[in-house]
Amino acid sequence: MPERRCALTRAEDGTIRLAGPSTGPVFTRSVLEVAGAVLTWPVLGPTALPTAEIHDVGQAQQWLWAVYGERTAAAVDAVSVASGTPAAELTLPERPTALAESAARLALGHWAARWWPTSYLDGIPALEPDVLGLELAALTHECQQLLDESDESGESEGADLLEEHLAALAPLIRWRRSAAPPRQLDRVLRLIDDAADNAGLDGEALRHLRSTLEQDHKPTATPLDLAELFVRHKEFALAAGDRHTVTGRVVARGSGTNDWCRYPPGFVDAAEEAVSWTAYALGAGRRIEVEVVADIAAPASGVHLAAEVHVDSGPPTRVPLARRDDVWAGRADLDIPASTTPGIEVGVLLPGFDPGPAADDRAAREAVRALARHRLGVAAAPHDGEAAHLEPFLAEIAAAAAMEEDF
Image 1 (cartoon, rainbow, N blue to C red):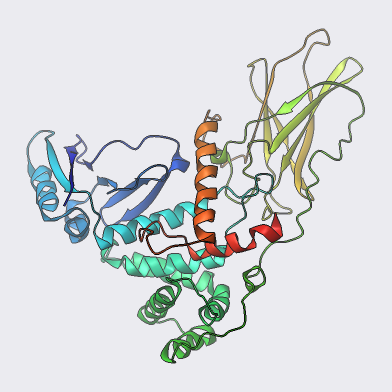
Image 2 (cartoon, rainbow, N blue to C red):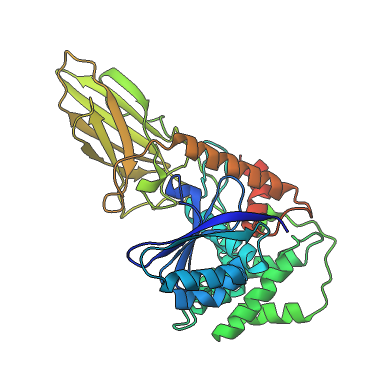
């Protein structure tokens, strides 16, 4: 079996790190909290064994051997009790174990729930959250060995996902009865049934699932329209840029920075051009109007984004934005001398959520869009040679089938 070298180090605070540093923006990494550690995989590029930040070796020993092998588990134990700040080099198998592959897939599913670059402008459809949520519940149950057994948090997380996303269960059962269901669908449904049984969940939908799984699988000959199978957002009419209400001479206009880290998922279209602004001259004064294309699932009221406007690299001016149909829009007066042509930079954020100044991550965002398009392409024509942790999620298959209709 091919092997690779890996660094094992212990920091002064006792944290043990396995493998190299996690680089790149946060949206290029998939992360999974497990018993005694945090595991991280790169979303872009080849996926191998994860980087581990181990803060409780005793808890981590329940899964270390099953993910990295027995030699690594023993080496972690030895480093944890050694004096000073020891380091070691290990040889790891290149081919991940079954548990490592399931963990990588679960982490990638959580990444998709948070960072999938849904964009009307870029033609990247949203993933149905209930469909993705049920597959994550199934994967959480499959990865129980990784989770903290002392407080049953993993089982609770899986049960919460099941209860939150049960709306997709009946459509998934119908999909299973179709002429050509996805190859992993039956397994996902059986894991959901087992997870519900372990968590003591009951209800009509779950009883219907168990009854279906106990019967012989008889696919129907009637074609299944996936675009109509799941409840999906439709009739999203793009209106951004159509309704400037300020009257005055245009001084400057441009596109702003759309940093995905500065607002929660589901608020803003993920396209790079989603943020636009126009500066006007109103007599001797100057005013800026900002428009941001909303995500199709953006809240209609009660929450307000803000634009952050920098003039000539000066301190930021916050412009409150309100949802108006398919855009967030707002305006503010700017303190700019009439005789100058200012340099203006605009970004969008949710006050209180924003982690800090916008980062120059355009190339990484474009790489994530390319990844999403690639995965949708694979989902539209899956094949048996795809690695288990890379095969498309059910939500991706449904989204790929609906792309032509929506875009």
